[in-house]
Image 1 (cartoon, protein in one colour):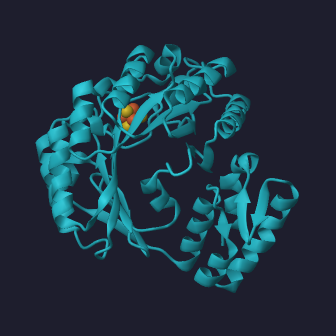
Image 2 (cartoon, helix red, strand yellow):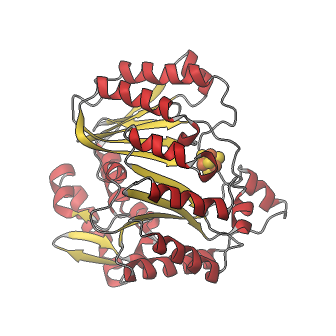
Image 3 (cartoon, protein in one colour):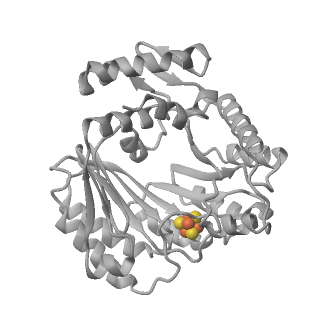
Length: 369
Ligand code: SF4
């Protein structure tokens, strides 16, 4: 099984903290849609005929596309790929770009999972991040999404924002839990120097992120999510049983995926490739770069992604897929983390607990070949 990611690069404006590839003008939108469909047809053999079980429209802001434009892309995918009967089809939506009618239209043409970029239910946090919507409108969108009948809805929230107190963070979690939605993605605010927010902070014009606040918010979140029956199944993702993101799980389990659109990445089981980023270059002169993964690369990636999940790193899989040398290095390296209480072992699976996950990247780096 495999998945398809479709990158829609347009945004209404650039959020101050954003480090993704996106453009604020939708000039050339028709040319982009034509190029995207062209790429989908050209690369129809990339997944080697494997059945496709997920399609994910990410960005950028995919909900800036009209439902009919999303339907046109889905039609090309259906004609060129072996998509299973009930695929998971996700659309990322920003509250300021949707109406009740557009949500209904997205649903009727095959979107069955909505990922709504809320970030916070407080206007001062949204202003700090320079998001375009306000909390009142965000609440309205959540009602619409339920009213039109989406069964799978996930919210994005951000913690560690300097304006976000513990009390407000608890309130954001309360509001999420009151919706009855089954999935939450919650990210720690990280500030890259070259973003507008990074520049503002370095000039003293905005408050800097405080690591202690971020860690406290993470601890509040993991404890409250567990109390509410959510599984913390990936470092930033929480779901009620049976409602995990099937698409993102493809990335975390190292399965094949095809990425369409400017800057999109693909993985065919042995190599990675990534498309040219500029929209004009993508439309006029499609190109990509490709990297064949070595055994070391594949082991390192497996360790990196599996330690961020609650199924952890399977020592038997490491031994069978990469060899004894890798299994030995891994087993030796994890002992101190088991002793320190950050990691547990269950049937030769090595899993970081909630506090250990905070150090997942550093621990993985120590285990790299
Ligand atoms: S909406 Fe998302 S992709 Fe677009 S600028 Fe904001 S954070 Fe970046």
